[in-house]
Image (cartoon, rainbow, N blue to C red; front, top):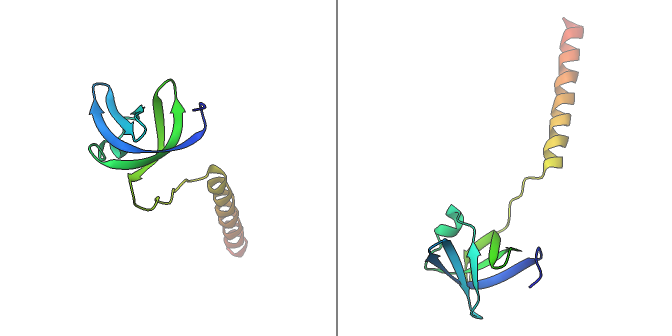
Amino acid sequence: MPVSSTTHLTGIVERAANGPVLRTDGGGTWELDNTRQVRKFIGSRVEVVGERSGFNGFACDQIWPAGHRRPTAFKLRLEFILAAAFVAYGLYATVGAAISALG
C-alpha cells in the first residue's frame, strides 16, 4: 500500500498495548490514532478512511460502523472563513461610514 494515499479499510477495532488497532478482514493490523472518535468503536466492526503513516500506522479521517452509510464529512475551509470576514468587515465599514455621515 503506498504511503499518503487515501485508503478505505474494513475490520474490527481492538485495544492493544500501544492504543487501538484495526484488524482487517485480510489479516492485516493497523495502529490507529488514539482519539476519542476511534476509542468509542473498540470491539466494533468498522469502516475507516484515512492515510497510511509509517510502517503500520493509519491516520483516520473518518470512522463509522461497518454496513452503515458513510457519514458526510464537515470540513471548515479557511478560504471561506476569510472571504466571510472580508464581507463582514466591508458591511461594518459601510454602515459605520453611513452613520458617521448622517450624524
